Image 1 (tube, rainbow, N blue to C red):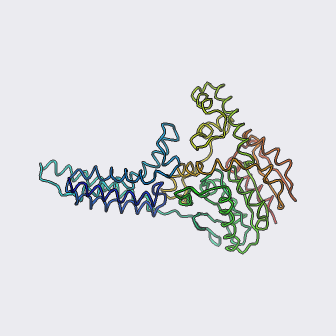
Image 2 (image 1 turned 45 degrees about the vertical axis):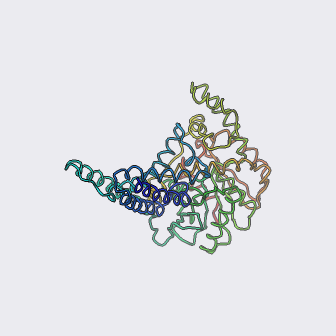
Image 3 (image 1 turned 135 degrees about the vertical axis):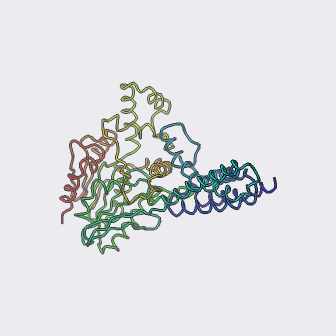
Length: 454
């Protein structure tokens, strides 16, 4: 019994350490590989200490309990209690489920090899070896898959790199380093649209050096969320400025173009308003203006659609919650799941099948976004561009869908009408919805090339 307690203490010590180091679980390739190696080593030591097959079971349990207790002060969908909803199940699988493959499985495999096998029947010994071998083989396969690095194909004579600016990941691509630089800020909090930029609008690389930012908390910037989720609208602006200054130095350009989509257009246009000296122009697409007012319209429209379509579960959920604003990311699950359906629009593209995403970025694509949404979205609702950005001292160009969701279109129309700018233009794609760049990419590329020529 004493030896088994010693094994549990080893596992618990690693659980506490991991809870302090990676409270949201391993998010990056280096963290995942470290978790596999250390967990396997702890399992071997625990198995030798316990000298019992019970270590195979109790060691992972001790680790998991210690880890969960250590991160109790951390909040977000990936660390909160699981929910029996579509997003809740997805988060459980890609959060705790993936963590199990990266920590609990190698720990159990290590314990299986580390303990001293007692005498038993030949069948029992063979079965034990086969089980331990399978666990080790699966662990090795997982480690090899995790170790495949993200990469972006080279452009002869151009620039193609996956750069880092502090905690932030940025994909930079263009056929020539002499082209104008365009920094793109993606839509959702913790959002990464690297795949969409590569799969659908790579034509922009013929006209610009395109820098695609992974917003803090998501994609290659996943580690930027931190234990205490210190992410606000002002930190988002600071992130955009940091990347902007990096690009200005890197390519020797005093001013660059700043583009933002949907939720990312709010910190992007605030940055352009507060620091116009760094930018040639601002480009908004799927432009958000006042999220609090927009969500009120979304609530009305989605509730009306659900009633008309006989979606009783959606109706009950929305009526039970009452109108927004709501405090947590999961509260907006009905919007995320049914918003495009209610407006008759195509589902948002995921575009994960690109080499710029390693396995960890693919697996955590939704989980990290929801964690960041949980921390940032309530604060973004304090912004109203009618009040906060009445004018831009640089050219302001907008590419909008003619079928944009009413919740965004109503607020944009009133703000755009009042916005003052030395060169203000609106281009509408009549058949596009919220994502003109993904729905009509060739026209989007041609439009930006025309607007930003010279």
